Amino acid sequence: LAQITKTRPARFIRYSRPGAQLTPDQTWPQIKDWRKQQRAALIARRTAVPQDVLRQWSATISEHIACGFPMLAGMTIGFCWPFKSEFDARFVIRRFRERGATAALPAVVATAQPLQFRKWWPGAPMTPGVYDIPIPDGTELVIPAAAIVPMNGFDEQGYRLGYGGGYFDRTLAAAAPRPLAIGTSFELARLPTIQPQPHDIAMDFIVTEAGIYRAGGEKLTLLDAATCTHEAKLLLESRGLLRQHGLPSVTAATLRETAGYSSPACYAHEIAPDYFGKSLAMPAEELTGLLNVLLEAERAGAKVLAAFLNDYPRDTRAWKQLAAVQRDEAKNCVILIDLIQRVNGTASTATGDFLGRALAVEGKIARLQFLNLGQQWVARKISEALPNVEQDFVRSALFAMQESHLLNIEACDALVETLEA
Image 1 (cartoon, one colour):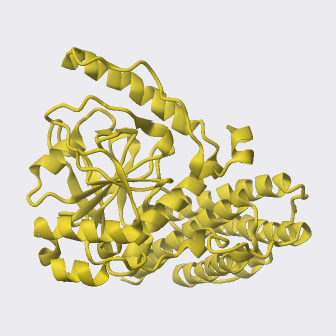
Image 2 (image 1 turned 90 degrees about the vertical axis):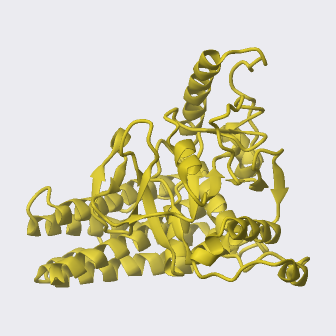
């Protein structure tokens, strides 16, 4: 795989299909067993992909969703916490939340029952759910108008291979009106068929690193962003979901007025700055210097947070929230050291002066506010550098790092509000 990624863009890698195919006369127990084998093979294949490649694919999928479904900014959106190297929807959810969306995470309430969705925001109280995946703890129950649904596998008609519990199918079947179902996966998980059964429900659209597909039980058709936007609005309108959320309806007249226009405003430059033309490459020495500055800052942040944790009783909600931010800072140090080595640089062993300045601050609230100043500085530093970073693996890692800082800033702000209360 590493050799392939050197010669072809990551989003265009093709894989052979896993496992033996089904025959039409197989029974449901045989199909169920076959699906179990396919699921295991596809998860193993996904988790074997290098993290920098997965980050690049996920960033591309986020961009497709943001450009193809701009109407979600005014809606309640269900999504899933990333699990076993799945597409991480939190970054595109953050962009929708900034424009007025409400985010919600699913929870299993009982076997063979539909999922419940509870409001989520960075810093929301969380508790371990099924497979120890975090779920909101006691936040408001909501009904999503759209759901971004992870898929272990998908077939040529848009049917989804999940984890075998059937929860999403039950949820979609029970919902009235049915939410817009946007399946997300990587192209390596594509199958000719999953042999759909009467209880299986096809996704309305499927989004991979290759683009947006119309699904709905018909043969997958690749769409541009503008066409996707129109078709998604028509589906939402037909199910009454646009009216529920106070959004303008779609008519044949509005379709004629906008037909042929280019896709809605996108943010491709945020993910791939040379998307619309070659970027000005940062010299190798300058890139190493940037990565080392970030490394020293992240090392300082990890040490600061280790100290700040002493301000809170262990295992309280506030302690757990800051511990999660501290783990991110430590993880970023590991990522940055790896990046520096891969660009043939030497990693700094120094710690940024943020450490001393932060430890001199007194009071929980003041400390968190000062911590966020440091996180904002890192996010801004990355944003300024991205247009001049040429290497895809560096750019995708830094973009993910920037997004994680923005999420953690929101979480710390939410914690500050709790402390003030």
